[in-house]
Length: 70
Image (tube, rainbow, N blue to C red; front, side, top):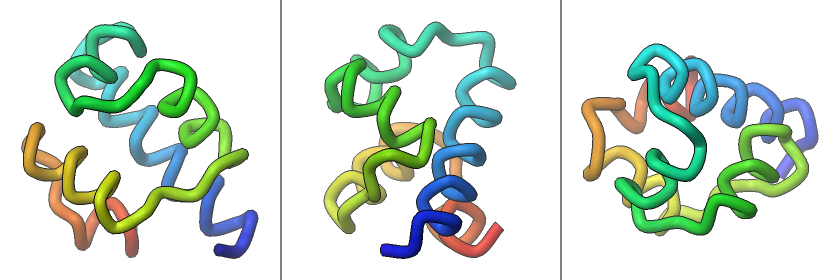
């Protein structure tokens, strides 16, 4: 995945998490991902797999369309 795309998606995840007022640890637990992986994804260092995108969207009110396309 393109680094800029990873950064954009990660930024949307972070903004959404912060809008909920949740810590990274609390949100990671809610979406069933490790806090370290979530941090790396939010910082654009790791790309999200389809499974991770599914976990984020099915465990929250974020749409996959918004997450990927903005």
